[in-house]
Length: 308
Ligand SMILES: *[C@@H]1O[C@H](CO)[C@@H](O)[C@H](O)[C@H]1NC(C)=O
Ligand SMILES: *[C@@H]1O[C@H](CO)[C@@H](O)[C@H](O)[C@H]1NC(C)=O
Image (cartoon, rainbow, N blue to C red):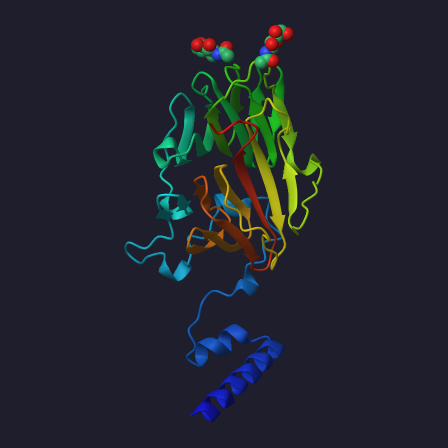
């Protein structure tokens, strides 16, 4: 019996190799009674616009899409994974012609909200609650920011803006745009205040990440006034976090590109572009990038304040 097994493993390997060489892998597998699944060889998305997968996610596994009751979403005490098939959009309070899906809210234990905003034709944003700061990042389309001084800023895909607490502003959108938005009640520090920030990810310098292989950019200043930051983290397939972090900070994460495995506590989740993750303080966390293309994720992290 053991002999037969090793023989059949060998012949399967040989067979796979031959099939690959002939370029008929998919056809031959399905004909020979193997389980079939969509091939990752076909998911090369280089030709698509940046962050296209976030607004056009695979509701995967695609062969389970119509399985009643199936979802990859998970909600636990110290973390949540909200996958695109679970997002529920409804009109955003105070915004016009805009649908929003709240992905992380204080009901989970967070001190911030994270939501997607789908601005339709001729839409306009509302203001955050008083004393709340706001961060927006454009995933699709173009929005125009009119800041407190009346200046306008065109925000295209990969652009972002930070609006200080109580700063009057609004976003206009003539066509369509999709944004991810973070808001939290600002934690004031005597003699310090934050300012308007507008930027694009690709203009931000790569930062040192001692002991790690991923590429890191921070979208906000690291100085004391700012009580959170937004990190953009890039991993090539096969790269993973060295540190298995457990820390007091909380996180809201949106996977912008790629796929991999996220560890949260004792659970290991296959994740892909479009997935959102809530990480409560002290949840063990770790990521490995898999698949054929780079992983990029956007990460909220509270900083610069005494947790007491
Ligand atoms: C922000 O606006 C609210 C409501 O107008 C006000 O009560 C609060 O004092 C303002 N905060 C600051 C720091 O000015
Ligand atoms: C804030 O500035 C004032 C005036 O310079 C100073 O008297 C006060 O000590 C400062 N407060 C803090 C917490 O540094």
